[in-house]
Amino acid sequence: MKIKIKRENGFVEYKTKSLLTLLETLEEIKATQEPSLAFSHGCRSSVCGSCAVRVNEKEVLACAHKVQEGDVVEPLKNMEVLKDLVVDAQNPLRTLERSGAHLQRYEEVALDYDDEKRNALQSDCILCGSCYSACPVFSVNEAFLGPFALTRVWRYVSDKREGEPKTKIDAIQQNGVWDCTLCNECTLVCPQGISPKQDIEKLRAKSSQFGYMDPSFGSFGGGFGAGFGGGFDGSPQF
Image 1 (cartoon, helix red, strand yellow):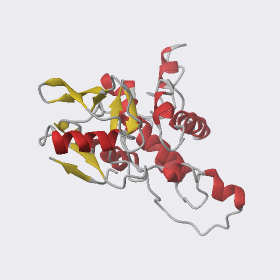
Image 2: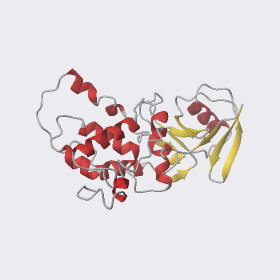
Image 3: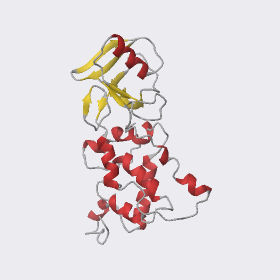
Image 4: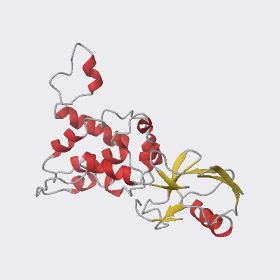
């Protein structure tokens, strides 16, 4: 079996055994052919998210992807490549800081079963960065908060225990909720089945409740919008 891996000087083709997962294949290549090959991994169980890469132009977890003849393996997009398949995963984490994706003011509120399930899926994010890599908006706007941060903002905005949801809505108006194209690429690559697109649509609806609107509408009707606001955990192997 042959696969291609993007390295510092371009794509390199390797012959390998027909192994079960891409991670096992990378380890076999590193052990027997190319000791300098660099990639990241952690739990080996699709929990930590640190082994995320792109295969045939789609984001996958290396520990879960079954290798096929002719697979083309690349590092994640929209992040600085440190070496081979290892990327600097700090940019997605910084979007969490800028978006305020955390519980800001806790209120003691009784939750029922529906309340508990409302944002449970968003809490399953494993920080793999696949949605961040798949997002096409970053190619034209590096300041975009992106699906990674916005879906986590919804996780807290939808939590009844958050005492200041408007603060979070305020923080995502610029380079945020309205800049998304709703292309759904983020949803298609999420290994946890989370749909950032749906979460962003909910954030838009919540934004409207707080008096915001799509800024692009403001160019119609002579200022129509006047008065409105606005695992990566795991150790790289070198």
